[in-house]
Length: 340
Length: 272
Ligand SMILES: Nc1ncnc2c1ncn2[C@@H]1O[C@H](COP(=O)(O)OP(=O)(O)OP(=O)(O)O)[C@@H](O)[C@H]1O
Ligand SMILES: Nc1ncnc2c1ncn2[C@@H]1O[C@H](COP(=O)(O)OP(=O)(O)OP(=O)(O)O)[C@@H](O)[C@H]1O
Ligand SMILES: [Mg+2]
Ligand SMILES: [Mg+2]
Image (cartoon, rainbow over all chains, first blue to last red):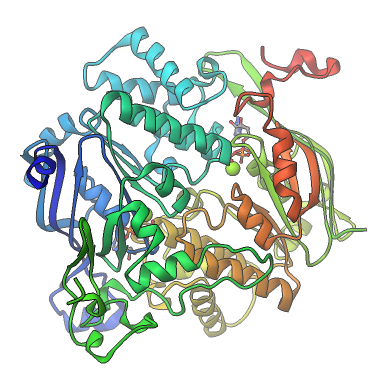
């Protein structure tokens, strides 16, 4: 079974690290002229996705989900950089690719939906031409054929009257419409892997359901693999086979989505799920107390320890390694070490 | 009279398909009514593209409304001269749906949060800095990151930066457009709790634009449903599912406003 799963692997990420040059902090830094050590915002993340499989990536705001997603598509913004690890996709190592090589893969084999659609759309070109461009740069269609296909794609993501609206500029579209335009461009070339960063945050429940159906259909029809970054456990439930939970740059828990949602193991995952709005309107919600540590000043031991209700002394001293607690399930928590 | 009374709000945009194209009129809001009592939290829901953001922006006159009236504590906001409007904006703030494009990329986080205080001449520099730290921490951001630029934050952190900016002036009326849409459940819970605290302790009045019906039930007192630019229903937040169900039966999702058969008198102004 193991070997079989491996043969079918589309994406295999090992110990990925993303670093930013540390920001200068006021006078002290400039006087001291200390060498600016990098801040790791993604630190040793491993994940894998099989063909036709969907992985949900969830976790705290600022925990490194977008940076992980961007790294897999060669899009880490400067001065950030991939500082370690390997990314194998369709049997090829991606971390050493040059930009020219990336351009052949990105958009064609890997589709990408950015978290903030406005920043990804060019304000001076019409939406239709930007979707058509996704086809043209990879030689899939050109001219009026590309335009016709772009309109079809906009229709597929439920833009009303797509032929007329394709001539609009981004500022003339609502938040949820722009989000869907990005998705249309990302699936234009039938990629093998779609990386979508919060693809449904701006959508009402009905259109969200239709978009999730569309993604499920692409998966079933074309064998599309999906990496979906989301904070919406409804999306995870409906779409994801497996889920990985991030906290402070690390994957603290991963496993089959259903199992993780039903019986979360890591104290962070438990706290996260307990924060769902409950049955009693107006009652204060159970947020995890405290706040995320600054990635530039992470505690020596477990990054979640300062907020953890189950913390023991050792948690402040030692970083937990990955423990397999069930087939396909891993947790990084000292309390779970030795329970397998 | 309620604190917020909006009647018959309309907003039309002029659209040119191409630089050489004939201009046409697009109707984004077409008969939006809303009333909010002081200290109330009202949810605004509706399909993507139904006009929620445009309606919110019109209330603060970030875009000029085409028709309708908005009385804020009895005063007609749409008739305010510029100087009076500037004053009134201290009381009325907005959290934008799209943090990326609403935060000046050249300003540091601290300056963004402080800007409103500077404009309204509030506090000494030291007091303002204290207020900035307080606001950043209120939304769960490390105050030591005040010297960073917006692009150095994550999506959810930027969203909270926009919230900190809006809250710095302690507005009495806040329009929050999807203010928690990019936040994980735990931080979302913190912000929802914060809204409830502000309502109880400071009597904040909030128009909460969202697509999350569960949050409406949890946080809001009442809910208003918008469809194709107009208010089509309103009621207690507990009824949100029933009200939502009324608009989402019988039509394809996302059918937009321009497609509706327009009232005769304006038929000619609509695009075919
Ligand atoms: N340009 C940058 N320079 C320095 N730090 C950055 C930069 N961009 C992001 N960061 C930091 O990197 C960390 C990870 O950011 P990332 O965008 O991956 O978070 P995220 O998990 O996607 O969060 P969210 O759910 O809020 O979108 C955050 O602490 C963020 O502040
Ligand atoms: N500046 C503009 N010019 C032309 N049309 C516009 C403009 N701004 C908005 N529109 C159109 O008005 C309609 C309503 O948009 P609005 O952004 O208010 O919707 P919304 O309800 O906020 O949607 P979402 O839930 O997706 O954010 C949409 O059809 C949109 O394309
Ligand atoms: Mg993100
Ligand atoms: Mg909107």
